[in-house]
Amino acid sequence: MSADAQHILDTAKAAARKAGEIIQDRLGQLDASAIDEKTTNDFVTSVDLAAESAIIRYIHEHYPDHRILGEESGQSQSGSDYEWIIDPLDGTTNFVKNIPFYAVSIGVRYRAQMIAGVVYNPPADELFSARFQHGAYLNDIPINIGNTDDFSRAFLATGFPHHAKHYLSPFMSAFTQIFDDAAGVRRLGAAALDLCYTACGRFDGFWELGLHAWDMAAGSLIIEEAGGVITDFQGKANHLENGFVIAGNSLIHQHLINTLSTYFEEIENE
Image (tube, rainbow, N blue to C red; front, side):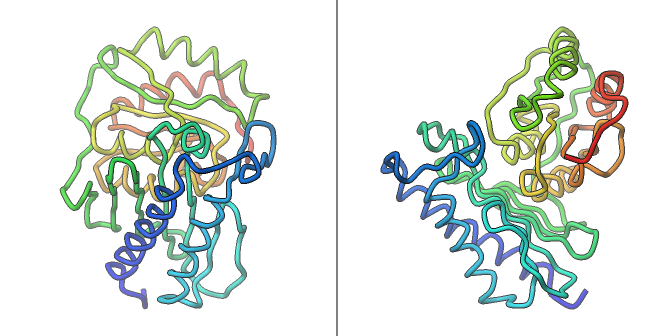
């Protein structure tokens, strides 16, 4: 690996904080002309665009040849083995409604391996980070996945499949069973933060479908470096490709697989 992984992580942290400043400076200042609907109830604002632009500019100052996959700008073309996967504002609807659960997510992949991940929640000033084989952190303090081993005491997070509504019926059937078995389920509206909350033990597990790589790239590494397990609904490491994700400690993760795989025997690339 030719680039220094710690420098890459430090660059991602700085870029996330720059984007966070833009986001917070514009909180509560959007009018209708600054909000567009990409698809039904899928919003993009001038803040998303400004934050992503700032992130990309900062990355290019340090790594001008690296590839970038951004939620708003798409994928840049480059022969580099490094790819930055960016969601400038995960939880845009929460931001628009002034609900303080949204984040900047930046993951970096070298070939097929995630090597760095940062998720920053500006209103709480919480920055989750991880570097491959060097652990996961919240504001530079080490974090670990929760140790709950009794599913009846598991506190879980999920998200409804707004972008994959053809899966709503099996999702609700699975949700009913999980809800009956677990201690509680929350739906907060930002998958990147759901993964980080799971990584630090605030949630015991998380599942969702219909996601994109930029929703999960950083969070997936943070989960793994915190000692957790993350896969798709069939237990395979295809979640960044197909958008189906389960995360938690090994016991909670396996219980979720046992349930979800019965309702989703075959899954498609979303």
